[in-house]
Image 1 (cartoon, rainbow, N blue to C red):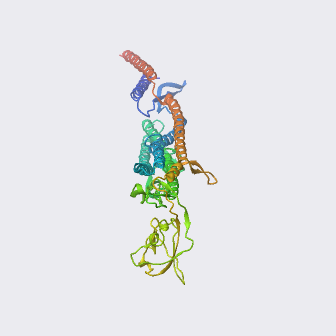
Image 2: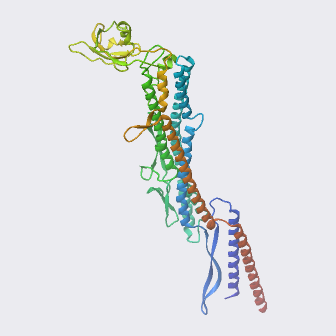
Length: 564
């Protein structure tokens, strides 16, 4: 080999040492950069063919520069990221449900229920006390307000989850577009072959893919140009040509309490099918919105209905201060927590609280033969026929015209007549086709006037005792197995247990993520001690190559001097 060939060997060594020093600098300065993978130059011995000796050393070559990664660990981490994202979101969502119920606390529903039952117990002890009656109305209004507030908060929570789904979809679309752009950069950078690795762009793409995995279940294959082909649930979201984003759509959705909210759904633009994630935080959001919140909201609505029905049933059997009976305490149209309210009658004041007990529902025996009164005049059966008839049993009135033929008239606003069940009067809508003077028969049931006066609190006591009655949590045979308070406490307890399980599974997934990250860092992370050791080694290599070149230069000077 000529002296010029020897100079080339030294030059190659010098260049290799300099490149390795460059990589040391890059690794050290990026030691704290998120997602950075340490770089290493792969060196191979250069060689040439010599006629006498075969392959002869020709210095060192840098085959390529690679980032230190373990693809198997990366794929395991991506799967764990989906688990962590899903469980983290579930833990957060269950906490938001707990925040709505605020149990146990002074603002919890249990506290309002206790005050409600206690107010009826106090009224039973002091039935003539106006203050005690007002306390019942105040405690009832507070309970109704708390039910309405809880129902409204659950509805708002559903709206919040819809907004979060849309926001997460937007983040996913940004990540998909970022991965597609990185694909293009990598494909263009690596067109030169194996030596031209787009290491830093690959790091950035890895960061995006791991974040994407937190939102949804995704997998990838890598094509010949180094581009990620990303799929979710078997559908394409990133191809070799670009991203295929999720489409956000909003549709009206009926809640258990009858109200409507805008429901967010996601569509895969690659297949135009509804996107149903199998893992990740978006899956948790769908589960929370469609299953968890409706489950607890439905139970709360059921408690409100059962409470209203039980109290109304007993309250109708009692007498108020005017001796009237058959009055609902809560609005009978209550369908759930959001629609719960006091009845229109009870809202008029304390006198309409039916604390007394007495009287029974009796049949009339034979229908009354009457005529439709002049237009605008009520048919006052309770005063003109019999004062015992002032309290019609709810829904029992039947009015027919005298035939032949006999016609059954219809009750209700806009029909033939309306009824004041408390006062025992019937008002005819003469414009509906029943003219004054028409012969009619009137049949009904009435409550006997056995009112025991203001000092009677027996009905208030019976309402207070509903707190101990099993009116909730029906078994498979439809038999109620728990009191309302116990059923609510059971619901709160199950929510707490569900939250505890979510926190436990999140901790498990977090520990696995930490373990995998430690393994990844051992391979891809930068060790300052190792890099400083390499820096000394490569510095010595550089100095040795420089000394080698200096020696060859002296030899050449000697050779040139011989020719003078």
